[in-house]
Length: 107
Image 1 (cartoon, rainbow, N blue to C red):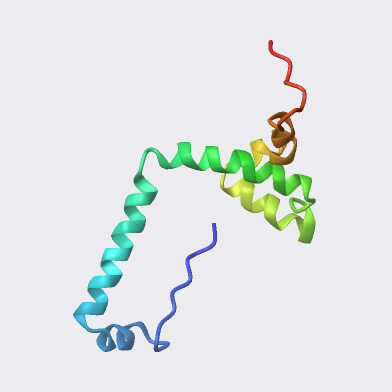
Image 2: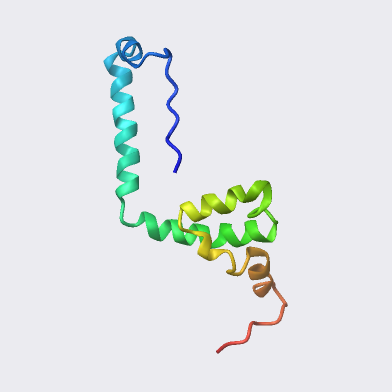
């Protein structure tokens, strides 16, 4: 995974730290704590799986997974969600629920 980019007002970290007042630093700490809590949340993996079980097959259908030297495929592999690429895409899924359409076979 690539390191997170941090935008600093000065190239020198110490000079930047001196320029920021405690109010701004407090906001930075609060934001960092929020991100940390999100990353440690046990429901995060369930939510990520549910979300990407729809996104990955749709990206495949649109031909985006292997475009630009398979950049998106590699990102999905890093996130451990590439296993959803062969799941049903949303367009096909919507057809099953179309009003007046044939009902899907059960069993």
